[in-house]
Image 1 (cartoon, one colour):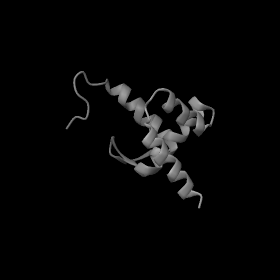
Image 2 (spheres, rainbow, N blue to C red; image 1 turned 180 degrees about the vertical axis):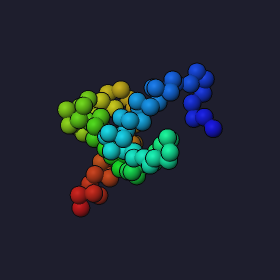
Image 3 (cartoon, rainbow, N blue to C red; image 1 turned 60 degrees about the horizontal axis):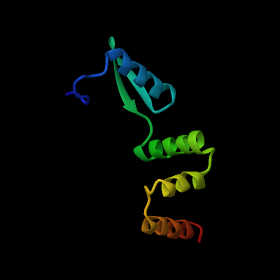
Length: 94
């Protein structure tokens, strides 16, 4: 089964990506002879949180307000969604 359509990335490209994910602590592996079986070591939710924090840090100088403001300026978030976000923040701080 292939997860990539044609043209598929070169094997070395995939190998580099997998090694990078392992170095960052997202994957680990077991050795079976001369092959490796890779598996996730973080949950999907933890991956999302870590990735989001990285994006906020790298592109918005650790400012969540900057990230949301960018979404508002680009009209990627509606007024109703923004109001819901405010309610969620207020509820989280009760």
